[in-house]
Length: 145
Image 1 (cartoon, one colour):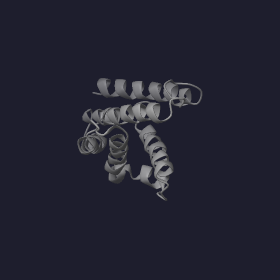
Image 2: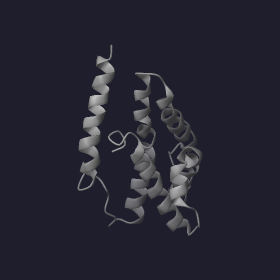
Image 3: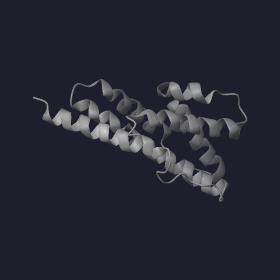
């Protein structure tokens, strides 16, 4: 989803994770605001997920700092000249270990929790046109004089 929406899905991803953190911690954080400025709050999000993993399991393999730095750097690669800015689309890779940790925690804490593990419904409205646009843009980059 992240690639087909040119990274916009990552804002939604952060929003949903911050909502879960707010609910779990019973805090008054603003998930939408933190998602919109994720460059400044990604480490805190990752660290809170790691802290919850430690609370539940005694330890956590999640390297919050390294993943945050990697995601920030990869996200900022969109400023590179053609064709190198395409590397910024790989920023989602730094979210994968965080999502794996969250999935593991969700399965542990709420075994009946329904995982969002497939592309369905409204997702196709992003995947099909976004994927087609992305493919055309990539071809345009390759065929540029």
